[in-house]
Length: 332
Image 1 (spheres, one colour):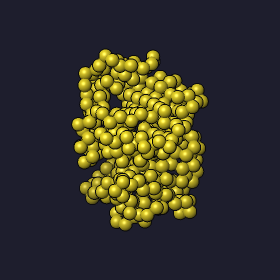
Image 2 (cartoon, one colour; image 1 turned 135 degrees about the horizontal axis):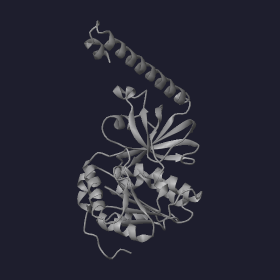
Image 3 (tube, helix red, strand yellow; image 1 turned 90 degrees about the horizontal axis):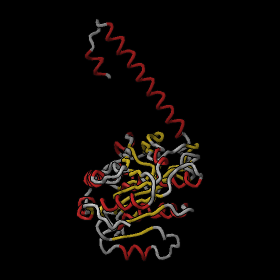
Image 4 (cartoon, helix red, strand yellow; image 1 turned 180 degrees about the vertical axis):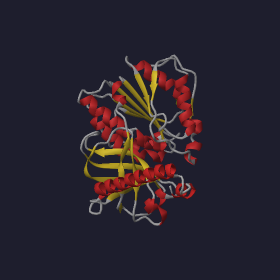
């Protein structure tokens, strides 16, 4: 805006008036935006956000749960995200606003949420500084953005995630289960497939998956985890004390995307939505799912969300474990 004023000739009255109007609107918009953020976050000093560090067996922190208390009830829709700022962070992070998907809410989705949880993968920069910030931190959150309720219009919903992409699928499943219980949605079958790039990633959403199964009173949800080889037996030992895992399955063989889509289509009658392709993982995994979908002859709707994880060393090392093959005829 300053450079525009430098380049406008002072004698060009029309240009000066137009730029003056634009500048005034820009300043007014930022004043309103700043005031709204201050109003919604003014109680955050008393209610600090808590951080739960998720460690590997070797003790390295791979991801975090950041639980943010809500000052007032906020409506959170499936697929929404927030801009997060940490004022007391060391360095430039205190003035930066980073977008993160809302992974979970305490309360009803699209209702009166008491708190919301962000699932954050530890990378370099902002997330790494947040990891070193202790078990609690003061946060500033800029409202939930985006979101949609379109999935409730379908009979069958298939959600495919890879790695941190699971953060974008938890809220939609939570919302669909609530809508099915209230008889406000058509959905009769929900299948969530999580392709784990490493076996330790199951800890990222283990508690959330257990809560989803507890919410599934009519047994319409099936959760399938694809783990690295030789990791299934260890995962089952971790789950041996749980009683509600009858609809959660773990496999350590390759994920055949074409066969999976064909199998879900033939499972029950009704139209089908394939959700979350953009958020399911890094670009190569995303393209593989799209290729598998394009090879299908069925009428399947494809939806994209606002989250597309970047490729990492773990995602590149796991590329050989998912494939796009010709559709098989033994779908049960």
